[in-house]
Image (tube, rainbow, N blue to C red; front, side):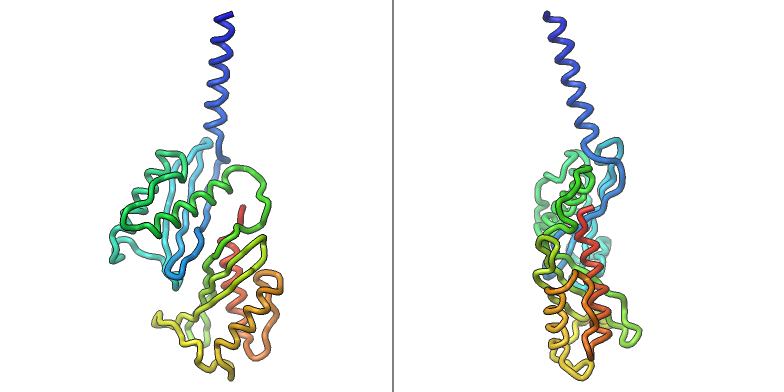
Length: 231
């Protein structure tokens, strides 16, 4: 009887070990954090044999320009990216401590990895998009060399809030009171926002007098939606 109990215990332990090893579906998974007014974080997670084999963490400014940690003036950010990546692989989880001196970046990376691991779990998601606020970038305009950056807030697969800024070729932000298309840029933005809240996400019909703005806004919103995908 004791021998049988020992065998059953060993089988149970082995079963748990196999389940643990197959916690995630092999593949490469990318996900993004919620965007703040200053930045957004991304994570690429590599799963091999059901385990986290590697994690790459990146961070982008509010103008959607990737930060180069070799030249970025806040060294804690680069240290946090390297440290958290190693800790997540060691822990086989996104449940790691915030890196001192890089709280915002750490919080974003942890959330991005959590979302990547949700994708890797093999569980069918309830929604198409994660709830949250995501940063999107448009193509660059051939007319003025500028591009658009948008913050899209999603709830239950619907756009519930939207804001935007136009980034000029010198990386300054255009004053929204400036006349564009014969009317204030802010007025055109508000017209797009109203339509975006009422229509299918990323597919607003052309607004009369603001064709370029509509196309760029749609492109940027779709980029944000891609970041929000749950699978």
